Length: 259
Image (cartoon, rainbow, N blue to C red):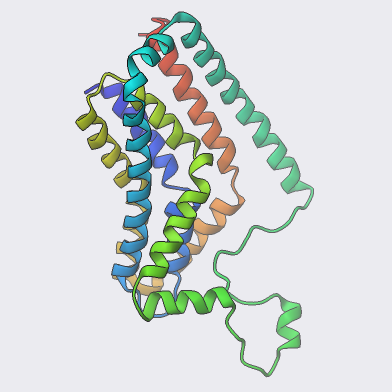
């Protein structure tokens, strides 16, 4: 297999591992105050990975009938220069996005969404509810049921909903499918690489799950810091910039502009 291709795919998979469905929702589930049932988290992550695997393989292999013509078109100098220009444009656009996000943050925007709805109230609410036990939110109650009672069908449904909702916005994932489609890999190799890609997508969440099981509630401050950092950081700008760089690099290599 092409090592530069695998390296690019690994970078894209790690970027995808920080999405709403692959990391933010798992962190929210891991912040459940009661005993963590790892099987429930694995159902969620497994469903997300299976969805992206099925969609990726279907798109990559579904184009097989048109692949010879598609490869001939995409390997033309005009197509490669278009890819190079697109990659460079995305790379520099990411800096503009970063500046806009920083300006919006400094002017005082809305606070980031708290992924843990059960985590406290605002001081004003606390004053109004003094002397009364704080009632958990609807989402907190749903999480309690999903993590303790019944089967895990609700978690699988949440995973499918989250994955389906964001699949068309996952630029790294779509770029990875494009790289696989235009590669010289056979169908079994494409399926194998896509399987590894999807496993790498959920690897950080699996690591956090293991830490939560071994360290218990001591890991909660770290989970909250990761959640807050992802909500406040210019993640979209970073993603666009990295995808642009990888697309431009791939085109430059195929045009023999770089070694």
